[in-house]
Image 1: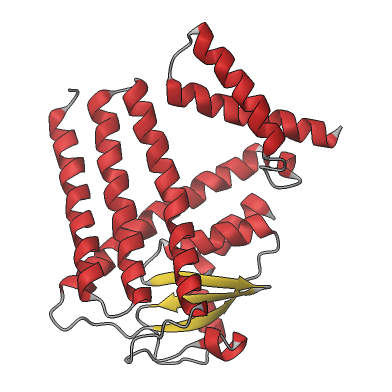
Image 2: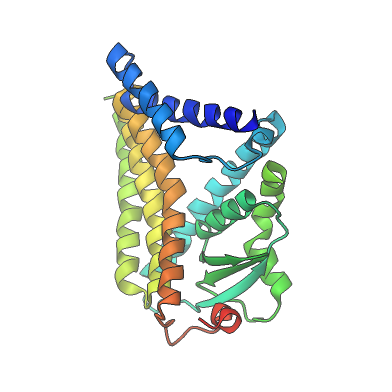
Length: 167
Length: 110
């Protein structure tokens, strides 16, 4: 029953995406989209993560929106940061790969945290191993071994919202 | 075209950030720093250009496609640069000589 529900959800997402991309309600294109949605949902089994249904709650969506707003702010800041470093004649960078410990539990939350970190000023996630994120930082702090301070600077700003969305 | 001033502003800012991203690709020293510039600037630059297209065309086939493309760029560009950086590190591409620390190498030995 649960699998069937997930398959139907996969199908409807693919179908809606098809309708948006073709943007036409011709019988031909709608029928083709329906057939393709069934085919793809069968082939790509488990397109969505397990327990996806629990993400359908207004509170989680509100925090997703908050996350997007804060992400947009950091993306703009990240771009001015790159602009400054690239255009500065002395190229002020002090790069290195540091370790960050995340408190997020689910895989989806960690994936979104990694992507968000990549889009924010001076940081690029290289790998996730268990609870540790390895992050390339373009301007590492003086204090290299202070994992807590590094974690606060890199991951802290997103964990608050992502925990409320996914965990 | 709806609201040409907004369209020109959005697309011009987008092009400027794309240009900075391209400059960063040339100026920064190693593959990891270059990926940083490429990911951040090209994501925002391209999204702004696509939003400009949405404003220009309105809610029709082209606008919706541009909006979906912006969402996909925002979603896939950090994922792609993560894969490239990880692949480069595992393949043994060294960090720039001025780098101060490499915890990934210390912990995984790769």
